[in-house]
Image (cartoon, rainbow, N blue to C red; front, top):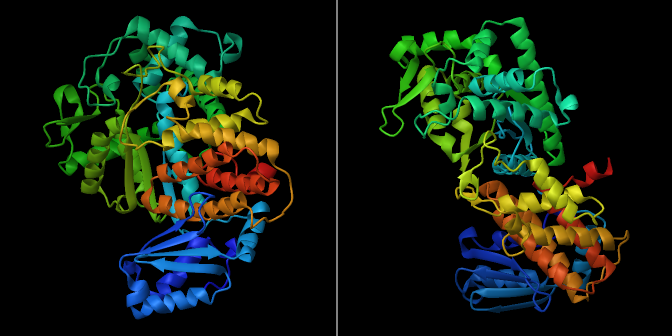
Length: 552
C-alpha cells in the first residue's frame, strides 16, 4: 500500500515502485510513466511485460490494493497497461511541499566516499573553452554524487613544472621583465599566458614529435633560455625559484577567479613539482624491477609493447622528468590512501593511452587499491573552426570572455552569471562525452542545439514571477502537470548516479522548461513549483547554488 504520498518520504514514483514490486516480480514491471501533457486524464501509466493485471493472481491483487488506496480515484487497465489518476488530496499534498521549496533528493550514497579528479590545468595560461568540457563534466559528476549523499573530494593535478612553465618564465624575462599583472593591466593568468605565447611564437614553435603523445613539447631538449631556466630551477637557484613561484601563483589566482565564476572549487590540489623529490627513488624501483630501461643518451623509458604507442619517455636525457613520470609518482601516492568507494577521473581522449599505460606500470610496481575503484571518463576534443585551441597560437576562446558575452545577453536577469552558467553547463552536459564538439557561440545560444537556452529562459521567468506562499490547485490542469512532472526529478537523478550520464536529466528539465515557457498564463502556485524543480535539479549537478547556499 502507498502509506504516504508526501515527497518527504521519497518521490511518488518510488512509492509506486514499492507497492507494485511488493505484489509483482521486478521482471514483470516494465515502466512507470508520469503524465507528459496537461491534456491527459491519467496521471500515471504502469506498463507490465504481460497481461498479468487480469490473468495472474498478483495482477488482480495489485488492482484491488490500488483501488483501496485513497491516493487514487481512478484505476483502469487494458492489456499490459494500467492507468491511475491521483486524488485531489494527494496532488495537493505533493504540490504544497513543492511550493514551499521541499523536493529532497534520495540520499542513496550516504556513507560512501568518492574522489573525482578533473581540470588538471597547466600553470602557464588562462582557462579557455577547450578546458570547459572537462570542468563541466567533472564538477557536475562530483555535485551529483554529493547530492546523492556521498562524501566527495574534488581533486585537480596542477602541472606547475616542466617545459611549458619554463617557456612562460623565459617569456617574462625576454618580453615583460619588471612587470606584474597589475602594471600590465591584465588578469593574472592572462598575463602569464601572454608571457608564454610571446616566447613560443617568437623563439620555439612546436617541435616535430609523435602526435599521439600529449606531452610532446617536453620530449625535445633545446638549447635556449627556457632550457637554461629549467636547469636552474632543478638546481634550486634562488632567483629562478622566486620567478617560478610568482608566475605559478599568478596563473593559479587568475584561474581560481574563473572557476569562481563557474561556481567551482577544489578540495585538494596536487602539484607536479611535489613529485620531483621522489623521482630518483621511483626510477630505481622501476629499473630494478625491469619495468623501466635506459634509452638513448641516458633517457629513462618504458616500452609498452604496443605498436601505436611503443615508447614512453619518463626522464629526458638531461635528467628532467617528463609529465608522464611526474604523474606516475603522484598517482602512486594516491593508490593506498583513504579508502574509497569510487574514483572518477575525467580526461581528454588524447590522454587515454598514456593513462592506461600509467595504470599498467603502477600495477607492476606497487599495490594499486585505488585502481580497483577507478573509472576513467574520456571525452572528445573541443575545437573551434575545426582546430584544437592553442593558447600559444592566440586562437583560444577564454572562458572569462565567453561568460562576459553570455552574461551581457542576459543583463536583464537579476543574476546574469547564474543564467550564463545554465546555458554553458547544459550545452556540454547534453552531449555524449565521447563525441568531439565543434564550439560555436551561435549554436550555444540556439534553442534547437542547446537545452540550456530554454532552462535559462525558464529560470529568468521564475525569478520575475515567483512569490512566497502555498495555494494548491489540484483541479487546475497546469498545476497537476507541474506536480507530476516534478515527481520525475528524483528518479532522473538516481538514474544519472547509476549511469554517470547527465544528458537525460538535462533533457527532462528542458522539456519541463519548454512547457513552462510556452504556457503564457499560469497561476502563482505553478511558478513556485517550477522554481523548486529547477533549483533542485540544477543544483544537484552543480549548475546553480543549492537552496542553502543561495541563502548564505
